[in-house]
Length: 495
Image 1 (cartoon, helix red, strand yellow):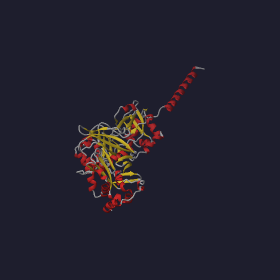
Image 2: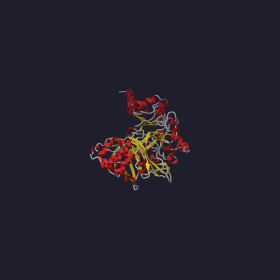
Image 3: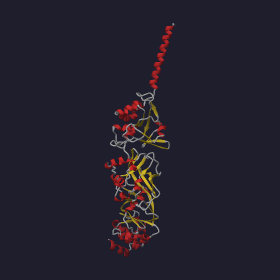
Image 4: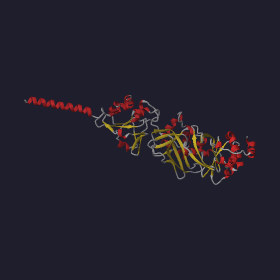
């Protein structure tokens, strides 16, 4: 073999090796972030948004970026705004690994008109706004195919679409968002905004930083609640220096609000009941205008990001108890029952049977469920049957305790679960309901009894006027002789 043949064979071998290396490099070279999004069927909806946006496409092809990528099934569950610029809120202008995100409080996105992406950490998990990063599918890195060599990119998979607050607002603060939502048909906020303006507290909602704002909507206000929403109540709707989205926030954990002074202290926590989310306020320290205790307000629209934190729209103001709506002066329970023309039958039954002595108790608070006159008229036969047991029957309607049980407090204790009330005549099991119009009901036995007039405050208790007495189907089978002298004295007067 001559030298020329050897050289030719060597050249051929080198070319072959280089060719095979090129093939191997093309086969095993990892996909870029752009390729991963546009070739993976799981990201086809995100890919469509990217392809339809020149800014997003250019960023992923040429710049330092981090993409937060929801899969198709996540987009399919999304009911919010779905414009082409939605994709901007899923792309940052820096490459961020999970470690770098974990060390951050917020991230800036491609669009200056959108708020920052707020970062939360809990139990080793990382959340972007309300979206959880799926760790095992994240931390994917590559270089942009058309950019400079030292540019880097990252992709992280998330379980929720990142939704900006509004396409019509330019990176709004909480105040600007509330102002815009005064015209929103679903969650108008005119009353709350007016009260903020009246008290000159707008600066609390416009200041820089990251706070959590709970904003009651208009239907939760009446004249009394509006007047009672003073400086401390407004401050009790703001958690300072913490941006609390709903998923990464621990339930039943109290956070301090701006109402954190020497005389007024209001705490708030997230609570779940029967699949619904509530905000619970706890006035730990109060005064004559700020009653101590807990109350709940249902979350209507959650997790709206703003420039200075996050806003949650809630059903009614926190820290204001309905029981304070009742007029002064308060009367003793016995005086209220005897003087109300709608409660004549209950009073006369109690007077003749000796039950009314319980209504003069001043050592405990009374919670009295009083059937109105109309409620008794369907049970006249039953009343005849039970004879002397009228006192026992009325006793099932009276609870003695160290507190007044408002309907709100009872509803909060039950949340559609049975509770036992220890009445004068022994324990009874009831369930408290509340419909969308705020009307309470009491499920006793198989009857759902409407609360006709709740929460009449008395000096020694509270009265709830109800539409039926606590008589179950089993009670109606009781037998007994009619006491004619009793029935004559009562029946002639009432019926």
